[in-house]
Length: 118
Image (tube, rainbow, N blue to C red; front, side):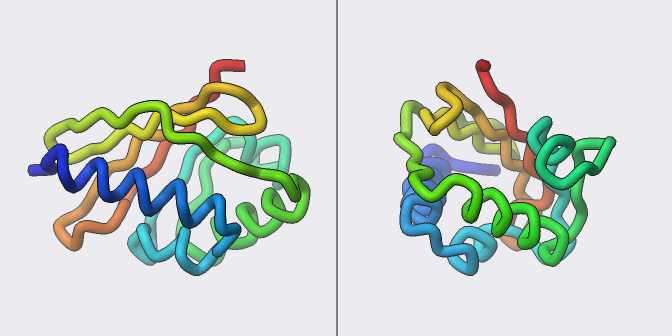
């Protein structure tokens, strides 16, 4: 069961890691074999399914995104807590976004789904 405190701490550290542009710190939140889905995956790396599996694949995608957007910065808007999930709502270079994170028993993210308002 995810607690509100866990969700808030996760969101704070996740946002800080992105704003620091620290790819290793960002990836430290995730299990080795996690899956990431985002509509941006299609356009940035050409994966038609919009899903990448495992840290190596996602590392390449995020490294490409960080290089393409040198002024990338996230602002935390809100955090939502579910039974085994956390949703982080934030404002980024594309506007309002929300990411849903499913956590495994290890406390690491096993599935992540990005959503964008625009």
